[in-house]
Image (cartoon, rainbow, N blue to C red; front, side, top):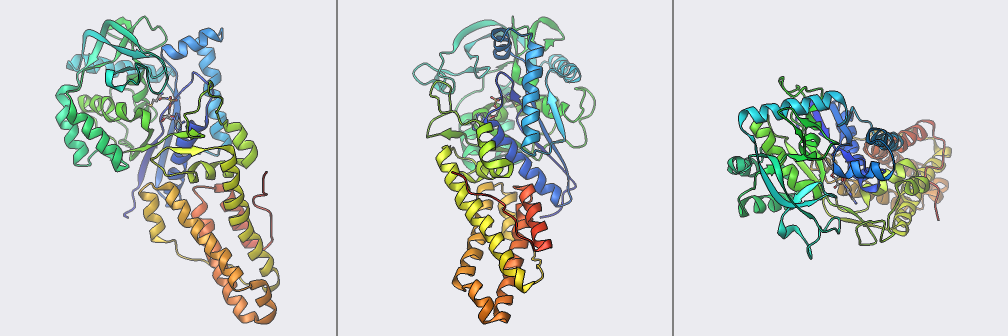
Length: 469
Ligand code: MSP
């Protein structure tokens, strides 16, 4: 693959109606892994994260907490920052939508869209789900309720500003089909295309009346922009864009990571806003599934929430990063339970990697073979550039398993006494393998990779991952 000299990866910006949870950590760790991988290759990288702080849901939550909305969002936004620091997320920009510069840029964009006639005043009638902060279609509902929030949406009919969608529909389909705007994995691309080809897009509501916690429309202050326009623009304002000048040089993003629940809006409203503004579309929209707990969506009512603090406490930072990405297929839903995470931690990290390092180093204490260097495998490069994060980890663990078996099959600890030259040869191979493994682990388990490197350097054993109960 040719070297790119700049690379922009974005994560969604998270609602601050509640503290961060494991689903948020999943997207953000995945984005951080990609970013670190590019950084390792010497590419210039910008990873953006942030918090989505306006809208009815947050306004209502602040009220219940008896706090001013700004005070409330300051606190929660801070919790996201603290969690990213803890999880060793190396981000380059953290955008908060309540930031004054961002709000100004949003107003500039809305003014432009209005002047172009892409946004016009109308009436929007539809089913509004406050949980999604989105208008839903009748056919999205399950037994009359929003499938994601289990609530009946409210029928709203009100004056609203609308974004013209239909006139861009065919052009959007072409951009997706030609992969100018690529949606990955492919099953999500199919889903979007069948949606786009199956019906005429309705013009999208971009403002609401009577929601004071938002960005007022510059041409009609009775309205505040409906959360998504405000939120989407974070991807540009995080780079310092003011909403009217030329877009920053880092634009467009190479990868925008999103969960499947926000795929539709990211594959319709978002690119259409950009098309109206004549701004290039992101190159890739990479979609992941949800983390389920015991087969079900996590919810307070079901009492099956897996707290990110608990996971961090038990498995540590690198353990958590590993378990999140190794738990299932990237792009599909991933079902976890604390029991399964514990088993995987013990099998892969304590026994697999930890054991390998300590055995190799212990045996080498006598032989003192120099640690070797091996070329980075091209096959592995392919799985990462194809964003198959869990398959990538599986390949690394295949190598770990191979090495552990190799030690056993050759009864290396006995061979050292019986046939030193042969033992040395095998040890050299193992050290080479460990060196490669430590390099491949850098984006995923940065601290562990560093530690393994140091252990190899000093040839002194150290416990990497202790078994947990
Ligand atoms: N604020 C909007 C996004 C605006 S981006 C311009 C939003 N926020 S959110 O906090 O509700 O969700 C943000 C992301 O977290 C989404 O990508 C969503 O898929 C992801 N997750 C929320 N719950 C999740 C799981 N249980 N598992 C994995 N990811 C999940 O939507």
